[in-house]
Length: 84
Image (cartoon, helix red, strand yellow):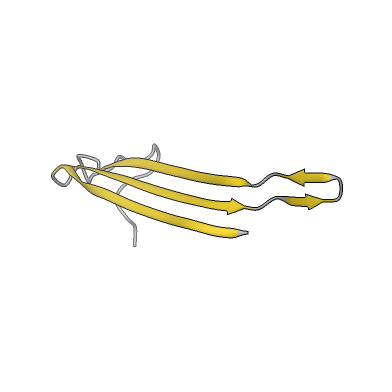
């Protein structure tokens, strides 16, 4: 069996959309592989010779947001004052 060319390519891109409020991120991963095989036999099964190519492409994306206010409401029955 002869192994042919293989390739892995990665790319990432991200940045702000709204300053200090909203960001984005995109990632892409491409893997390709090709090989050439000779004719093979396994018992009664004959596998013909040929070229084989495999390509996988995985892409993902996200967005991140920060709340407008840094003050959060307390649940009912809980006060924001602490007792010492």
